[in-house]
Length: 501
Image 1 (cartoon, one colour):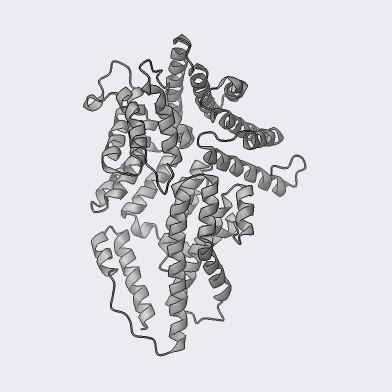
Image 2 (spheres, rainbow, N blue to C red):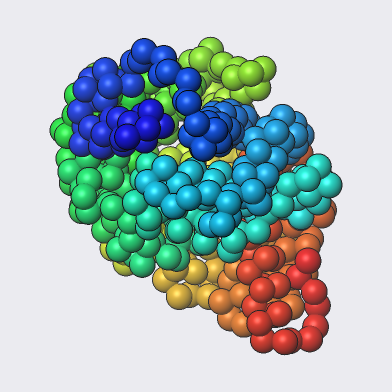
């Protein structure tokens, strides 16, 4: 057995240990080993060099992922993309070089194919999600973003017995349970679940987490909670993994309107996790503010004091604050005044930012409870004295109410809510993000009714007429996703009319 095959076998064994929650054993196996002797034959040297190139490109790919995740600013996406161009070029060259007639078949070849499939698939899938104007710049720099090709590569990598099969599987799961969810498209999860080696590691913490996400997206909140709790119990060595489960548990209880339980997980995150303490403190305050005024608060905490603390926890990652953190700080700013005006439904507003109303839409009882909460908030706003936030707050409640009504199949009432937000555009003082998002939601309502041309007009307006509002990149990504879907549908049907591009 060559040194290369031995190394690949050891890496496979270490990965298996990791996926079975045996983290210490896995780490021990991956400690630096004695340097292997230089291979006597050139036939051994070439595969080793190729595998080394794949490993190097993969490290650059991880760096790319961190660059893209640190901030949603479009300029940083471009910088990040150009920064990792060398990684993409390595994968592209390897893909064109490695053909069946150029290298002998065998276990090492299968692992090499899997590594290339991971890189090519990841790049194409990620870049395909970018709005056209960004993608054109990246294509000019030598990149390509073909979603279907990327998915095919990852599915190929996930369904062959190679070292990176589970990495391909996890990337696909991330795509199906996070990216498509945030973009408002939650199709394909059920069919994908049957693929790959997921069942082999079904007791592994990572796959319990993804199993919970799948149940959550389907609206099976109780089953999701069970999976996330099992994921926490499966291992104790990796606390950061617990935090991922806490974040999802927080939202699961928020969907159910169990604000104290949601607060409990936000509190755990604020004490144990360093990703964004400002966000966690904001969520604690948001959940407490959803409770009736006279109800005792856990640990004697006060939401007003928590809101006032949010800005003190501001942090910067590579010189930039996370967009969600900036949003939370801006929203909490109104509590700095002694005669502050309370936020109407901050927990539901943040739920919208994470596309949580898609989950609510799967359960009639959750929708009805949310509608009751919004109706009560609407009543309180009408009875409250006039303030500088009055129009903004009413428009927020209208946007969220429109979403609930849409899921309850009350299309006419939902349309009236979204149109009312758009009609108040000139009166909104702070929450300018509400108007493009109202247009986006109204366009989605039109798409569901088959009014595609009207939807395209609204999407173009939302994309072109509004700039520099909160969470702008997320809204633009969602708009791009809808326009792409409409364009694909139009091409498939050979329809004439307005072009969605």
